[in-house]
Image 1 (cartoon, rainbow, N blue to C red):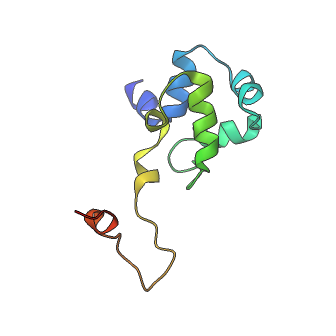
Image 2: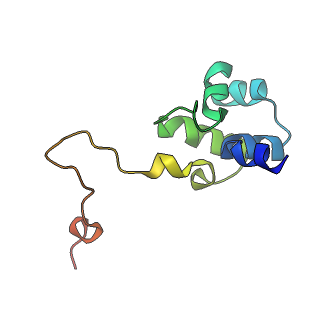
Image 3: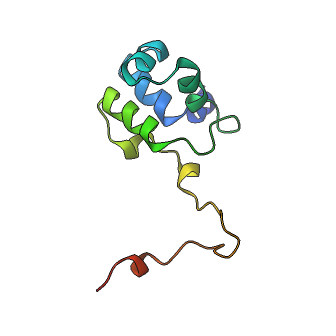
Length: 96
């Protein structure tokens, strides 16, 4: 049973904690029920890179922080340009 709970997405956990159905969340966010289902899929079937606006709308509707809904695999660096295979150093964005 614990294994099954571990596979639920953070979105599913928050939605269930708030006692909201997928249909109610879809109506509150303007996101289709089928998209909510895809966001809640087990990791192997989950949306690989969901739009942040979907997650932000869900966070607002569920009364949680956006960071509460972001899955660890969504935070991984994705290579779009072979010339930049590694993420930039964090301090390169900020001046001292």
